[in-house]
Length: 219
Image (cartoon, rainbow, N blue to C red; front, side):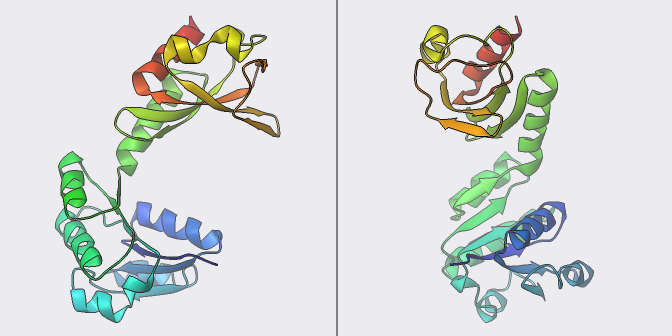
């Protein structure tokens, strides 16, 4: 079954989510107060609606509680973001993901019932910084304030060693959950799995431990 989504706020973040969900074949209702923005999505989203989502009667008239997941991607108007999130939970939406502008905004969104809060600008900044600092880091996904998943390309210092040789879990407190090798993905690799030059290691752990591992690789 197709999942049904609502994206509220069609700025850069909301627009990119709306496009991606639509491209993946999902049912998407796109909502914004700006008619010009909504018009851009009439041929992309399943439904595109001009609406004020801080009005509970408007949300009810759109049948919004029947959707699987609502993404509140409202940009600079923190008050509208908070009111919309509150209204969505009050009308019975099962899952609400909301974009936060800062840590205070995040705390308020969590208190009023947001199921998930994202910081796209902050998280993208961290990912770019990690990619710039280390040539080996291909991608960086934050799981929490202190834990992440990273994709790291194996260099000469790792090549030819098995996982048991490197003893990464004991030395650094991180886990290699998968290895990408050309088109192959080895999930939960065995301790005797050798690492090849250019393998992409998918690791999970505390940020400080991932940093220690990266620095050791580059020594």
